Length: 156
Image (tube, rainbow, N blue to C red):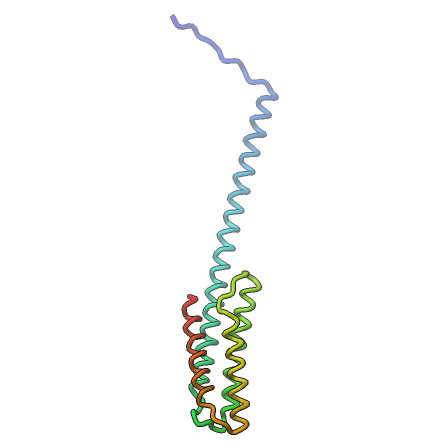
């Protein structure tokens, strides 16, 4: 009824070709796995870097605001020292934002805010040294530093 039929044997070149295809598939699979492993590690590093930068910007913004709160509204003798510390923290936050922008192509906080802060601090110092009223500059500085702190905390 049914006859036994044997299948033809594969030739030696066909077997070599099959082995090469299997080897190529194995190498390709391992390469893909290694690339996935590198991508996962790079993503974890990038996420950790972003968190650290966001945290550092927030710390600098909070430190600037904290130093600003030490300013006397009437212009005490330590005003220039405190303004110098405020400027230091604002500049540190600016450097972090610029560095992040250089590395990632994304500006986290508008750099015009930092320019405005520097201008207000400069005017504050000039008016203080001239013995003029600084209440408006104090209010402007308070508002800008609170904005910077809010934006820095909104990053994370």
